[in-house]
Each structure stands twice: as structure tokens, then as C-alpha cells.
Length: 384
Image (cartoon, rainbow, N blue to C red; front, top):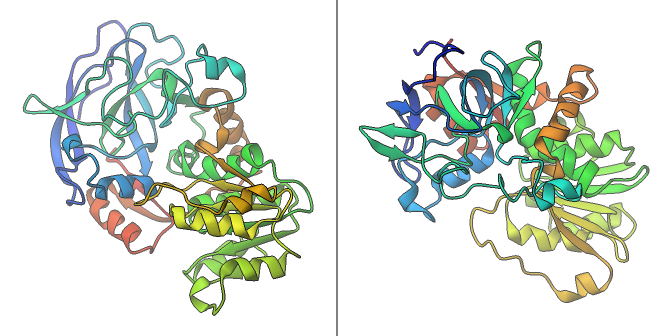
């Protein structure tokens, strides 16, 4: 294991263990990888905890970008800053941080608008490289190993842009607040920022995974009077109750369309509907489940296939609205510290989303649990 870099000497390349995907859907292999020093405005982080997000699994299985292998997945993580690159003033060696899959440069059109979290400089990275110079910081035998979302936390060390990291208090439990770097925040933000759920309203949520349950929690905290959860897994009924779900529908047990049941429960349609499955076909169902005139559907899921959304124009003509949500509309550096504070004050629930804790060596077992829909979030603990 590499020692922390001295603040008086420039950081050097280090070698560490990483779980490398050599091809789509192939079991991850523990490899010795070289991690380059952080470049300008970058930091190198010793990963402490990383949870497995559904999008990690989706992209790992996807054959859409076969050239981006070998690759290191993972993005929902917490860690300790090991070294900093030139020009970094916000972070120092030893700081605790969350990694985030989108950043905030503070100066582009979107960052200064206060209307968007779609940073033009540090937006969602899809090419397997770093934002700054379009190259990788990982290599094996001198050959590049590609990043995922410019984070790649399935590694003992990772280099991220300082604009894609959020400093947190060292008193925060790293193995739980890592969920705030993606899933939990995405759901809460969809309810609070994107939909702006109102008191006394009705809500229907398709998919009660980590994101869907976080939407339910956000709706409950906003005072929604009816929160309907839709999921084919009957075990989600009890779990949903602890996050605010008042009614549960299992489509597998119905002999009529889900939207008809939702309309009966909500006197014609929900005020808000959320698609958290990652299935574009469900988007149309969600639209049909919300009210004429003002019904709002928010889609959060990352589709595994068929990325095109199809819906009858009449659903929109009747006054319904369809909106997308990335990271719940949160601006990472400006907003995530507020969520961490809410967690510290026990104003939001995160711990209940973690169903498994496993060592780094068992990461393939964790992926299997996700594939079998037997867990919400599995937190991977890195070697100390």
C-alpha cells in the first residue's frame, strides 16, 4: 500500500489493487494497477467505502462501448485525500471527501445560472477518461485502463477532478454517507428540487430501489398524503413503509393495468409520478398514472435497453408534464454539504438503504446480489 504523499514533494505514481472489468459482464478481476499522480486541479483519493449503484451494473453489462475495456467501475464513494495536483486550494492531504459523478466548475453558463446542475466543464463523462486532458490515470503494463464517470471507485486509489469531490467532516461515517454521492441524493432531489412535491399531494413511485425509496422519503418529508409504491418484488412492501410508502402495488398480482389502479387510489391520477426503474416503457405508464391538467412525471432511471421514450401525444396535450432528473438537480459542491448536514442531524434516513456490507475481495458476490435483486445498496469496505 502506498504511503500518503508529502506536502513538500510532488506526488508520484503508485500501485494499488483494483477490481478491473476486462469485458462487458465479465467477472471483475483483482489486478495491480498503476495510478498516475493527480494532474492540475485533480486530487488522488484513498477510497474508504464505495457502494454499488445500479448504473454501475447496467454499464458493466452493456455492450454499447466495447472499446472502453478494461475498465474500473464505481462512482458512489467516500475516501481520504492522499495527494493534490497543481492549483488545488480547496483540498489538503488528509481531508475526507465524497466523489461525485458530475462536477461543478462554478464558472460555466449552467453553474452560474442557478437553474441547472449540468456543468458544461465537468458534466457526465461518457468516454472513460478524465475531463481535463481526455486521458486515463489508470494503467496496467503501460496500457490504459478506462474510468467510469471520471471516478472509478472500485479501486483502492482513484484520481478525480477537485470539482467532482465534496469535502466532508471527518466525524461522518464514511460507509454510509457514500450513498449521498449518488442514489440517496438523486431520489431526495427528484422529490424536492425537480418535482417540488407539495404538502397533501399524491405520489406514485415506480421501482422501490435505493432511488425510489429516497423519493418516497423526500415526498414524506414534504408532507405528501398518499405515497404509492409500485414494485414486482413483494419484499419491498415492508421496506417501503419505513420510508413513507402508504400504499403498495405489485403489478405481477394485477389483472388490469397499473395506471388504472393508481387512478382509483388517487381520484383520477397522482399529482406526481416517478419512474425509478430504468425502463423507458414504464415512463409511458407513469405518465398515464398522473393527473390530467397538472400531473408531473419525473424519470430518473438509467435504461438498460431501448433508450427512446414513446408516449401518446394526448398525455401531454391534456396538461401532463414529463421531466428528466440527473442527480436530483443537486449542484455537488453547493448542495451536497447541506444533505450531509441533514444526515448528521438525523433529518434524513440513509442507513436503512444499506442491506449488505462486504469486503473489497467479495465485490463479485456483491454484483451478484444486485443482479439477483437481493439487495438495495451493498457497501464495499476497502482494506485499511
